[in-house]
Length: 369
Ligand SMILES: Nc1ncnc2c1ncn2[C@@H]1O[C@H](COP(=O)(O)OP(=O)(O)O)[C@@H](O)[C@H]1O
Ligand SMILES: [Mg+2]
Image (cartoon, rainbow, N blue to C red; front, side):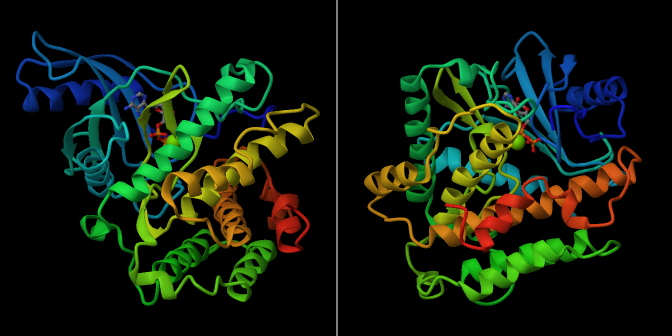
């Protein structure tokens, strides 16, 4: 990861995008122009984000962030991009919780103005722990912080999850329910299997990912299905990780990236929070640095979450493995995209494309934790 450039994500031209954005903006706010457009330096491989300012005497906000569905002509990470769903989720969280989310300004579902649907929100000042170079490496602001500062960031981040889960009424999030039958977890896993089938439709299947799905079926949490209709099905953020939070100092100022939000058990977010840190941590250790081994430790996250919510996390072996498996499917798709764009050759073994292959194998074999 350190020696490779950022994966190619777009076939669009920023200057052209800005010109078209200005034309669109003047239809929503007469006389307004989009200026100073930039692409954020790090984070995100799926939708596209454009940061810009509004040039107008009385704009609703001056600094904006625009989230644009992936270019359907490119080799997208996900099969569909539902911007209305993300926009609605952001507003739901703003309405019912004290979790900070960016103020949403406009949703444009017509693909004509910019080539794909998009929405515009307030741009929140602060800093995001980067994915490239990962925040676990020496040189990142989070690595340079003190233990106490990182502990504060961790505590507030777990609290963000607790508040999303506890404060949004699940019935208001019904539009995030997944199709199919059975509990929310059954549907969630079924959707991931369908996503995996789409990723490998024109490729060799991945033996490791298939072993992972088989492991989930064999180790299905006994209470997961019974819990389907209780308080244990909540709005889950989805891409619940510190790389999707803008921090003001070490305090969350905006929770971003609601693309993977879904109804499901709370442990979906807890498993993802813990494992996605481990993904960067393991990568850092394998390249010879110490990383941040004390950040987001599974036992501490579980304990703090239980204290905040009264819900003791269950089946966390299952949910951390499920997080690593979901991440493997995304990684495989991202790797196939790089192969598609000719950036890397295709290996004989598809599992060689999964960067955290060893971790996932160790989890399946029960020797990771
Ligand atoms: N509302 C916002 N305010 C400030 N920065 C933002 C905002 N939305 C996005 N960004 C910047 O864009 C990056 C990518 O945004 P994100 O929502 O995580 O999309 P994705 O990861 O799907 O590309 C963030 O890490 C952040 O730097
Ligand atoms: Mg993101």
